[in-house]
Structure formats: C-alpha cells, structure tokens
Amino acid sequence: MRVTERIQSSGSTLDEISRLIESDAGLTARILKLANSSYYSVPGGVKDVRKALQFLGFTTIAQVVLTSSVFGSFKNSGLRDFPLLPFWIHSLAVGQVAELAARGLNQPQPSDAFIGGLLHDVGKLILLELAPEQLSRIARYALEHRVSFLQAERDLGLEDHIALGVGLSRHWKLPELVEEAIRSHHSIPETRSGQIVAWANLWVQLQGIGASGSHDPETESRSLELGRLLGISPALAGNIEQQFRKEFEKAEAILGGH
Ligand SMILES: [Fe+2]
Ligand SMILES: [Fe+2]
Image 1: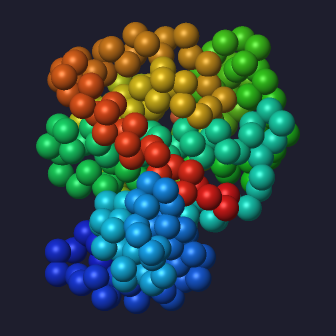
Image 2: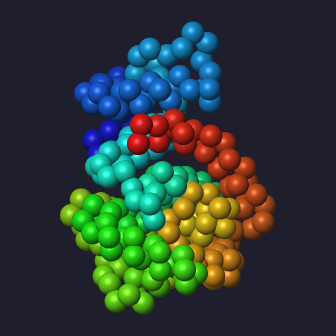
Image 3: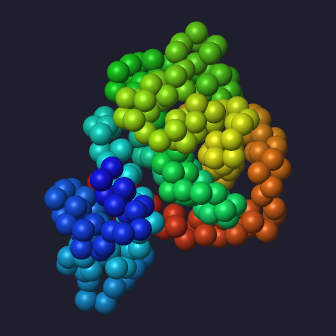
C-alpha cells in the first residue's frame, strides 16, 4: 500500500520508491526478474532496483507490487477443479484490460481500475483458503451445467463470491471504487468504473485468457451491452486489445514464482 501511495502521489522520487521496494526482499527479486526478462532485454542486465525502475515505469511497478502483495497473501496452490495459475492469469488480465479501458475512456485513477480488475473475483480465493471442497463443488457444477460461477453458487444455495469479496475489501480497507467493482461485476453496474471492470472481465473470458471457473452463456451479449453503455467504439476496442497484448507479455514475469 505504501509503495502504491508513493507512486500515485506526484511528489515522490525514484529514490524513495526504490528504498521502499528494497525493504521487501520478495518484491526486490520480482522487480529485478521482470527488468531482466526478455521483454525489456536491457544490455548488460539490471542489478539494482533503482535502475530497474527506470526501465519499468510507474504503471508496471504498481502492477507488480499490487499483484505480488495480493497473490502472495494466498499460499494455497489450487485444486484439480480450480487450478490457481489460470485464475491468476484471468485476474491479472482483467486488471490490465480494465486499466487500459479506464485510460482510453479518460477515467480518473486508472490504477484503481487495475486493482478492481485484479480483485474482482477475490471471493473465490477466500473459498479456496477456507472451504476448498465447496469451491470444487461450485466449479464442477458450473462446468457441467454451463452456467456462471455465481449462478452455480446460487443454484447450490451457497454464499457467493461477491459477498466474500466485499467482506475482504472492507477488511483490507480498499478504495470504494474497488469494492464497487467486486460488488457489481456480475450485473450491469451503475458507475462507469464498475462497468469498466465488468466489461474487462467479460472481454478476457471471450478471448479465452486464463480461467475463473465461470461458463456463462450470456458472456457475449452482456459484453456488447456494457461496451455500448461505456461508449467503447470498435477503434477503441482494437486499441485496447493491441496495448493489452503487449502488456500481457509481462504476465509471466509478473506472476513468476506463484
Ligand atoms: Fe465473478
Ligand atoms: Fe472474473
């Protein structure tokens, strides 16, 4: 949280942010790994955080810090019916697409769209930690009946991942925009920031990137409706896709180690 606050405030310097990152060994390793990945291919390599930050840029640093602190809080390695890596990929991709869409639509605080996207399904992780056999049941039901994860939870009469996610968001005192993204991503949200995360979630599912245990037959029609509401033109959608493909090349390095 401290690193992302420093990144968002305009007065912070590279030195301050470097020092904060260096106080966390895991984060330091991840930042260096990303800076030395083929994506950047810096001649001679990068050996210190300060130099790494110059290549990464603030948006990417914020993404790495947030992703590793959120995912690092969960130690479970996933289930046969709910493997974790595709779920991380889903979450990270929704975060990246939401941030790009928020920028393209001139929304304030696009990095909050990233956090909203990254965490929209965090309720599923709580199930994984606390009630893995329940998570397996829901995932199997959704697959067999070709319904959304939420519909499966409702059909089985269980507390849903939205209520769990909202609870966590309050516990962690996350920004209101983030809580709203968690609360509304399966409906047609009232706020634009909520709509952006909901749209990004559907877009990522339609592209077949990662997996989140959802098999909603209405993914395409809902995505069209939200795209219309937000005013995402075909040109903007193309633009977002193109930028995302580039961003997503960093995914392996960002997720590395999880
Ligand atoms: Fe969801
Ligand atoms: Fe999702």
